[in-house]
Structure formats: C-alpha cells, structure tokens
Amino acid sequence: MTIDPARLRVSVTEGERWRRELAITVPADIVGRERARIMGGLSGRVRIAGFRKGRIPARVLEQRYGPAVEQETLEKLLNEATRAAIRSEQLRPISDPEVGAVRSEPGEDLFFEISFDVEPRIEIDRSGGFVVERPAVAVGDADIDAVLLRLRQQNGAWRPLEDGFPEAGNAVSVSILQLEQEDAEAREYEFILGEGDAIPDVERAIEQLEVGTAGNFVVRFPDDFPNEERRGEEEHLRIRLVSRKVLDLPELDDDFAASLDFANLDDLRDKVRADLEQTAAGQAEQVVRARLMEFVLEANSFEAPDSMVDRYLEAVAADGPEGAPPEKIEEMKAAVRPQAENAVRTMLAVESLARANDLAATPLEVSERIDEIARRNGVKPETVEAQLRRNGRMESLEREMTEGKVFEFLKQQSQIIQAG
Image (tube, rainbow, N blue to C red; front, side, top):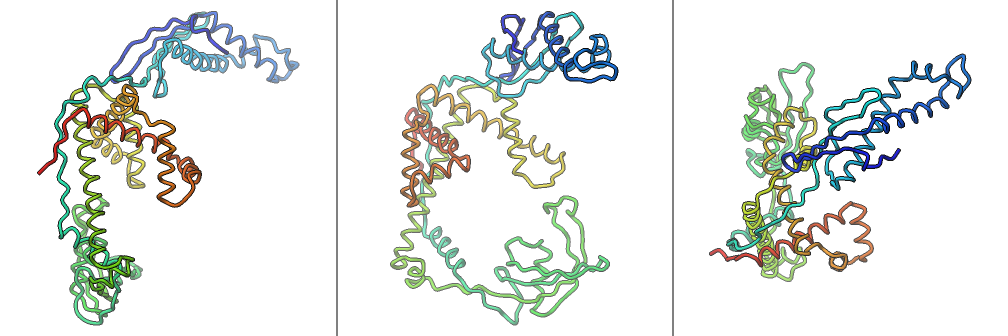
C-alpha cells in the first residue's frame, strides 16, 4: 500500500543531539481499508474444513484470524506511515526509527510515535585565525644507529651455546611441567628472553638454569596479566632449559650495506636518515592537523549524534579481544566514548568544511591518485582501481583525499609556526 502523506497528521519535535521525535496519526478510513485488503487476501489463500476456498464467511475468518490480521495491519501501517511522514517532513534519518507509544483501536485513528537521529548539517562559523606550532623534525645519529641495529638483528644468525646462563636477547627452548596438575604433560616453548613472551617470574627462573638442567619454581602471574582471573595466582612449575642460542650480528660495514642492495655504508645511512626524516615530517603534519581540528571544534560548538557514536564504539569493540565478557565490553565502550564523540565531531566538521568550500575530492583527482599509485607499484591503473573496489577501499581513498584538501585549507586560514 501507499499512503498519501497529505492524509497524515505529523508533528516533529527536535530532541538533543540531532534526535527527531515524530507523532503520527493515520486516519481511521485508511486503517480500515488496509485491514480489509489484508483480510480479503487471506480469504483466497487459507483453507478451513467445511468451507470451499474463497467462500469462507467473513465472521469465520474474523474469529480465526482476526488478531493476526490486526497485527499485520498495524505493522504495515507503521512502516508505510513512517516512510510517508519522513518524506513529507524532508528528514534524512541516519538511524533506524524506534517506535514509542502506539494507540490502535478498532474503527479509530491509529496514533504512534517514533524517534530517530537525522543527518547532521552543521555550519562551521570559524575555521581560521589560529596559531599552531609544527614540531621540529630532528633525526640524530642515535636514531639512525637504532635502525641499523634492527637491520643487523634481522639479518643475524643464531648460534647455539652449550654452557653459561641465558640472558636477555637469547633464544631459548624450554620444557615446562605444571607440578600441581594431575596427569600433566610437559610442554615445550621457544621464545626470546626479554621480549615479554613469558611472564617475568618464568623468565627469571630460566635465567637461573644452564642448558640441560632443570629446577622447580613457584611463579606468580603479574597484576597486569591480560587474563584478570589469573592475576596474582601462583603456579608450581618444573622448568628445563633445553637449549639457548645467541644472535651473531653482521659487521656494520660496506659489505653489510651491499647485502641490502646499497652501494656502501654511507649510502645506507643516507637512506635511513631520509626515511626517518620523512616519517618525522609526517608525524609533525599529523600534530598540526590534530591541533587545528582541536581549535576548530573548540570554536564551533555542536554535538555528535548518539547513533553515530554508538556505531563507532561498535566498530572499536569488534576489534577488541575475542570472547571478552559483555560487561567488560561495555566498560571499554564507556571509557573510550569521549574519544568516539571527538572522532565523530571531527568527521562531521571535515564534511561540513568540504561541502561549504567545495573541497571534496573530484573524480578526476581520484583517477589521478590511482594513476600515481599504479606508477609507484608498476601495475596498470585498472588493476589498482579493481583492487580498491574489491576491498571496499575506494570510499576510504576519496575520504582521505578530501581530508587532505580540507586540512590544506585550514592551514591557509591560520598561522603555522615552526618549533625550535
């Protein structure tokens, strides 16, 4: 059925955070016609013993199916009247309508209330005149040495040691038996000491053993152990050190640089420095963007719709640990709700600025970015575009490009000074 919006009586009340509450009245004659239509369709479908199909008296149908028809009529009218009312009031819902009070009596008008969040249409009155400090991009020799050390570790060789006590950085193989558990079997583990793969008490116990020796230990689970139920719990373990290895690092010289396809060590250092400076510059840019948006949000007061914040929190919860109890998930949501509200407000501000200043990424700009990605990776643009669409990343790319244009616009409206 289709309801003429002009036949409805609709009143709209503005609630908090872009909430709209609608009171809708459907005239009794529309209700009656819809009920008759549903009952008539039912007459030609059902079978009742003693009556021919399509010849069942109305009173029999009413007696047998009256309540079901009432419910179906109500559901259809609620759905269609809601759609008609939303169209007539030119509203743009961003959440599912929630039905409130309903009054439905035979032969009378149908009255019901619904509420939902509408698409925010905010206006950014002040977008500039701020002073933001860009952090200094400083890369020192110590930063470069740290990267070179990681490269040497990645290209090192593990050498077994037959004696001595293990220490941080050694790769160890251990056998662990839970002494207080009946019929327990020893389990073997391999990990690097000092990297947090085992609880501190276990690592300290291993450091007291030589290869081939074993000992009995009481270990305590730390107060920050991920499984809260085990925090502070003690276990009696028999730990045997099966083997230990030490990582031999390659010499930091031209030969090492050549193994990584660089002309010499100076060439490798220059590349590491350039990469670190690029990363630091990107981080400094993110600081500038974040501070600019803080100023914009402080200067323009508006609230994020609860439904958008809730969806953001649901996405965050989905990325959380599997199997977490519901109460812990709710605690986590409550803890990060302020950040979620800020993230949604940021998104709305960016959208508003893009709309008001014609800064949305154009199809041509998106196409040029895809060409750039294709050239950088040595593939065809069609391949890149197909992959973006297949992975659902096309909208993310457009949004990222739009955000970039918005922040360039914001930087032009304010003063960016260089720190130090």
